[in-house]
Image (tube, rainbow over all chains, first blue to last red; front, side, top):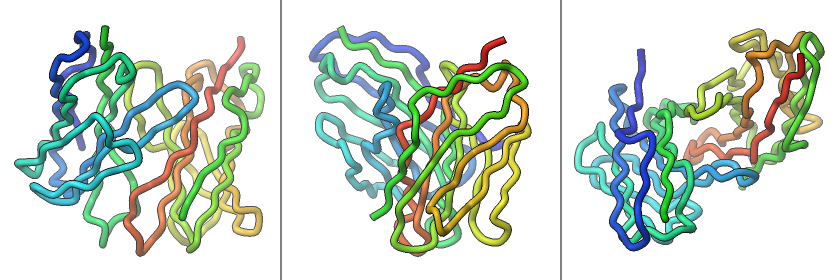
Length: 115
Length: 114
């Protein structure tokens, strides 16, 4: 069975802390994504990656960075967490664009609270 | 550019009643369309998808959706709601030949009353 695993389901951090959210997929997918989910706003794309060491900004990249050193792992980094980054973060993966339909496979989510 | 509009942030039905969740899209090419479901404190999982072929698509848990090109719609239905259907539902669109990155609607919360 396909699986996307997010390392932390719940995190509580303080303003100014550096936060790492880790995501691993076991499906050999090329594409990986980080979304942020807030009530009434749906899913907003932060960053995506279509290959190792490649990354592209999504709709709301400000305040975030990402790292993809290995194909199966995609990390989201908050360099200096702020209270307005309190949210649910969802990682997803999909096949390479050429043979793909855009179907995403999601992790369980990481709920981050910044105090 | 592609976009998705889900009418109604909340839909409330009685158990056993028809479920209808509305989704309209805009796309510059014939799209791929998706419905995802999210149960509380979980990630999203695919309910069903339309790519090509038959416009009526059946998914898991008794849900189905019909692609209507003339109406640019992809509404989700289920004949009889069950308490376990209470969840958040997201419609999404992607464009073949483009980036394949889907655009999501804002979601509709389905509430099922006993």
